[in-house]
Length: 69
Image 1: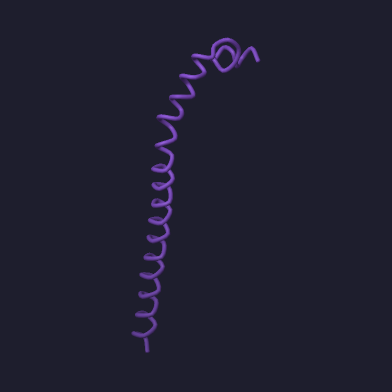
Image 2 (image 1 turned 90 degrees about the horizontal axis):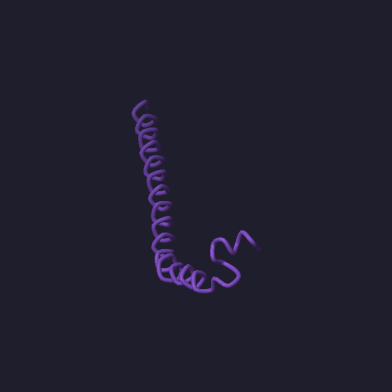
């Protein structure tokens, strides 16, 4: 409990706790949906690039097999 009170998270320092909580609610929480959306878009972009790479490789393979015959 002593460690928590040093950071203003316990004891008589309710004002510091309130300010930290207010900063968390006002700053961090509105940014969370944007962060999640960017992570989803990065994952989709990576998947799209992998599928495009596999498509190019398969086209090259098919052209190679057809041209031999």
